[in-house]
Image 1 (cartoon, rainbow, N blue to C red):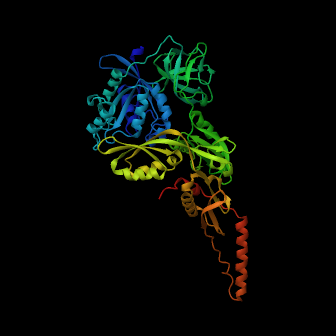
Image 2 (tube, rainbow, N blue to C red):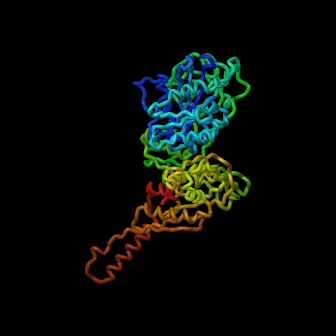
Image 3 (cartoon, rainbow, N blue to C red):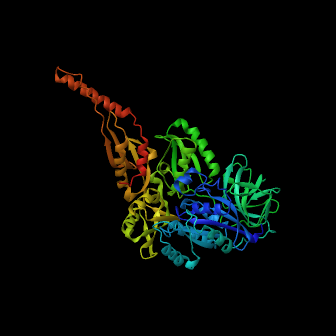
Length: 600
């Protein structure tokens, strides 16, 4: 195919605005997938993606389209993940394209992720094709939403396509617009090879399969390749295109999208954003934008049954083969036994990994409360990175603690401004700007600590706005804060898996709430069980689980009162000894209590 007949594009949208459904219709219209093989969300391979209605793993497909002018085009659709946690992967997918189809729900209008992805597309100077989807809904407002898009992009209203992906209405116009409006890829066929890796997966026979967009030069199966960031040389096993199944070819030239089976056994060696070149004739400069994946949220994952520790380790190893952004290392806890400290891109990423481990590997797991990475400056001027509260140095050694802050944007109907402002202020948010998008919708901009954001903030936001608000966030910087370690003691014994790093102003409130919740879930013993929240050696909150009573006098009838007193004294001494020697098993519900501190 000639380079000027290639079109590389992706579809961006807010979650549940119909991105995957529109992709299905485009595959049908171009006969890329036969009617017999067609199913809903054809590009979403995982059950989790179908259930949650969000693309987790990017995919690509080549479609052959005959335009109205009779010309035949190769349309390379690069599907992008649909959640803010995967924004880096989205940016790399956009870097592999010349145009994007911007899908907006005709009922919901422009929302947080719509704008976040749109700004990424504008940064890459891509051609934007706006599409108003779901025009068949009873609540659809196509005229108003078209006006929103016109105000935002400056695109004439007649250039905004109105479609129903579910019903297949006007979807052919999207293909025609891609063929006519998206520019062909630039690139020099004679230059040294530069291919952008925008995703990868692991195949047990072919090793790591890298998804590539060739920017300059030609790649063929005969010549060895090199990863420019890692300086790692490899011999390609297979070269091909996506149709959407993998179809081997002999060579790919500038502008094409395809894959290379590298034979490498570790997916971390083939990083998203890296540049692939010919080993004998390497390019002088790699493609811009590469950066290693950086986890933002950390949590301990433990098997409920400690005998499954080996199975969990094997499952994490296999899962990391397909997800380079997942990191983990072994850790142990006095309360939970042996497990792993895992790093995730965000809370949604953590939820997906935990569900995949439980479903695909049949494990019963317990996750501790999520934490973030703190920078701790000690009095010896050493900076220590701490992602587990139990690793925090002694308070006497700490000079200051810094925590990550995020820029957040909230889109909401103006009716809910009060509850949202109250919620963000409670979470130590700092107000930046407020902007009216139209007569009824407002965009609020705040700075907020990531630790406050990951503890059920999104659930609370949806609850207070009846689901109408949408949220987007990106990393801002690290800021010094007055933070302390909150220890939880059960029967005088500290439970490391329940400890938290909290702001000093909220320590009492959180300690009191947590001890109260734990009192409800810790089982009663034959002796009173004190549950305490402490900062250092200072106890700031306490609840006591009352002892179970055994009626030792039931068999004592008749006789002098001293007989009864003697039995009660013996029971009291036994309870005292039991309290000193007895242990309390902490149930799973206790660890879930930490996650729901601010509910109710």
